[in-house]
Length: 344
Image 1 (tube, one colour):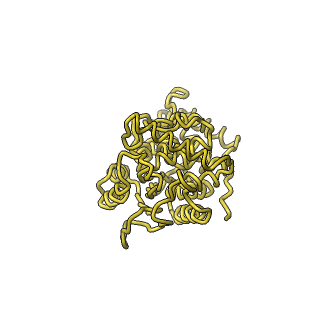
Image 2 (spheres, helix red, strand yellow):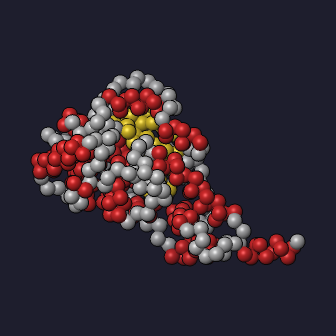
Image 3 (cartoon, one colour):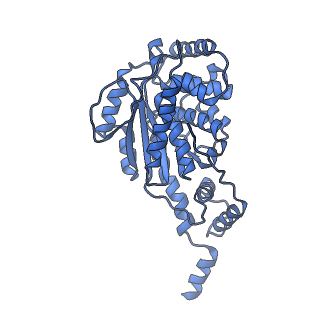
């Protein structure tokens, strides 16, 4: 299958123009801190000094994981579909935060082990009823992985806006994400695993041992899509495809927490320039995410101790994106302030 080609946003002339525009605002140099960096990044993504955001959307991909059979979650697999029902009933945290920030929200069934029937608010992209147990066999066939990637690309190809956030739901997906992190970064499994849905220290250690045994079972591999198919989830693979397409379309990519960042590890191995388009919403409290962000050389906007997923970090960070483009577009410059004063 053909994956999107992503161009770097590197443009020294435009970067200089953006820096000049930012520095000429009525403020001390650098006094808006990370908002200045963010405004410059968005301008480079959109190839303009007059950056603007329109129709932001968050996509929440849900799927189940066969590895839950190994006892790696504090919750049963059925919680995945129950949480999808909560999303559809607009009762989850992501519903609240997306609504308060004027962000469209789309829920996607990427591979939940449940039959939802026809639901107006649910996009049915089910690849299967959950992945296989990667402790015993690859999580996905190549055909399933390719189908998930294609669904993600198609979904984003149909969006109208220029800002996209990624969220997920899937019991067991912190185990998949930790395995991906280990294989793609070389960080020891013990430093990748965390409590997920609330495991005890003994539970975390068991999760570590399950991943270590699975890594030994599957042997050496280095191709990112092989790693994704072996250890990933349908929702993670769909996010990879969605990210690649979004960057190809020069959208701003809002990255959520541990699981979404594991998808980005795959996407960045395939197309390194995708990182130019990524805004990291927060540092998750899930063990391993800080190390993952360090590997990506990422500076998150927020650090609130979140570890919920769902795209909640994206929704909470969205007002900062608006603040960055608004000060760039609306704040007076020293020149315009002087002109106004002389006119008065």
